[in-house]
Image (cartoon, rainbow, N blue to C red; front, side, top):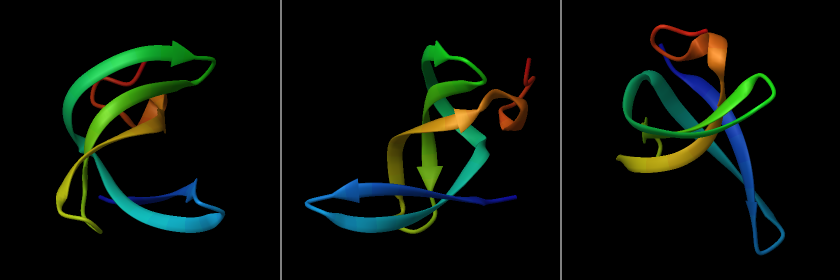
Length: 60
């Protein structure tokens, strides 16, 4: 399952299709989200994104 997240770089909105089931590392938590190193299908590389904790393996 992939989900769509958006980032902004140099004023441009960038769409990322990420797979929250493919997590390499987890970092800080903020509210209901966690910073995770996840696989980005769009760019075919590992990227850091804020992901809803319910969507991560073992969520909450």
